[in-house]
Image 1 (cartoon, rainbow, N blue to C red):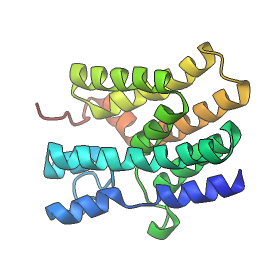
Image 2 (image 1 turned 180 degrees about the horizontal axis):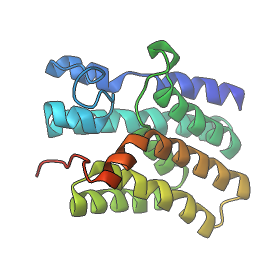
Image 3 (image 1 turned 90 degrees about the vertical axis):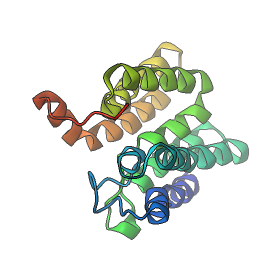
Length: 190
């Protein structure tokens, strides 16, 4: 489990947003919201750049979990899920200043349970389409994923891991929650 966690942490640190940002002439860590994630890149560089970051960040979660499932079993995959999200959110190479973890958590979640993952994709895009607020889509998934894991009979420790992963992601959205409460959260352009 330790090997799975450490390897996934390394994958999670891959600077997808920074690389895409460099290609489009923007530094996501100092421009826009300052968050190295898909939504900030979307706002800075457009839809194609944002989708590229989202897919890259999803791969940072999906690949380590998929490899852990191939080499070992679900406990190691759960450790890899935590590791990938931790590497994205708290990357040691960037002084522990990373993204919010949604796409990385989502990529891992799709591999761990494709049914729950696909439902969460629908929930995310449905909420974003309805409200034009990416944070509401992310926060909705943060609630739905562990609840569905519980309802669909995941073992207790796995439900706890899902809740922790989604809780970290929700915690990283604290600023968004405050802005939502105040009515000042930015909406995505149509």
